Length: 137
Image 1 (spheres, helix red, strand yellow):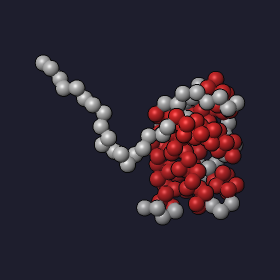
Image 2: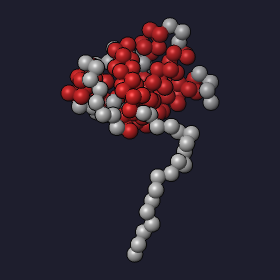
Image 3: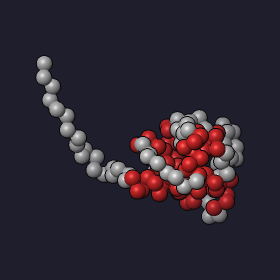
Image 4: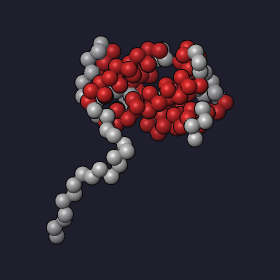
């Protein structure tokens, strides 16, 4: 039996891919965001999909290496969360602090607790929640 060769398509041209240069800038921005959120190394690494300790240490030193598609997606979602918080809170510090505060919408857990479950879907759910709160639906 002979199978046809599958060729990549541009079925979703509305979803541009993140270039290597954009990914590196996104990584640097993510490091700065995590500093603003005052995350521990283990929290940061968990949000980045259980990133290796040595890789995270290199990132903090500004040495960004190859970034795979999953990590690019995680960072883009995290930036969406940050953007949502900036829309909701005029004072940036309030948004940074909000991620650690207990929230009735999350059964008393904080947004960070939700994100620390480690699944990319947890990040997506939090971003969707913030989008809904600011009326983006």
